[in-house]
Amino acid sequence: MNTEQSISRIAIFDTNPILAQGISSLLSQIAGHDARALTITGPTQISLPVGFAPDIVLIDPAQAQLSATELMTRLSGPGDPVAVVGYVATLDGPLVKTCLAAGFRGFLPKTATLNVLQSAIEAVISGGIYLDASAARLLVPGRIDQHLQSEDILSAREKDVLKSVALGMSMKEIGSAMALSAKTIETYKARASSKLNLQTRHDIVNFAIRKGWVETHA
Image (cartoon, rainbow, N blue to C red; front, side):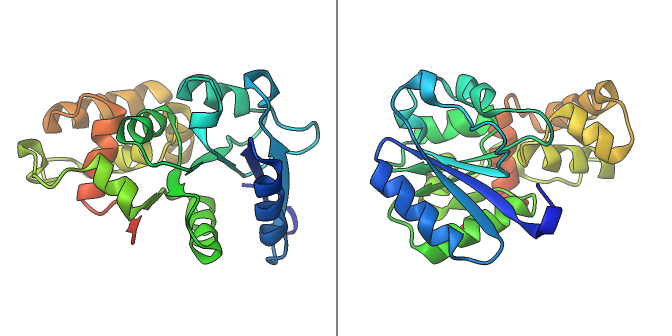
């Protein structure tokens, strides 16, 4: 996150320029926010303006005409990684799962109030993941999977690594935070995933939601 003058920089992408500008104007009226409206006219137009490095990008991935991974790559820039939040017209289970697996840091519907949007921004800026309750229900069905019975089989370091992976951090970022090599972090991740039978990043996020490591919001 950009810490200079404690300003949170936010980019809002949408195919509807009026919607993007309206959200940008509302957010810019909140102290500590510098919001910019950007219009999606095609996949080649999804890029950040020169000289503007946002902390958060709000975007409806269904409008992007790119895979979630390609979208994350397109929005990545030098310096700290940008936190991407899905701000969608329709919550779709497969889309939410794919985007979170690619590194999205949150999901909420465009029907959310300004207060809810502000809460999502604050949660993500502080390093968390924000999931609207309806998005969380799409990720985590009502049944309890057998491998989720206990986190006690994990060492403290394995647990910390899984939490960090669930929050969208890369192996390099986790290693830097823990003063360990990315290879060592990958080993901890593999060991913890094996113990809990977690096959994908989505499985890890799913586990984190069930264990209360990731907050969901009604």
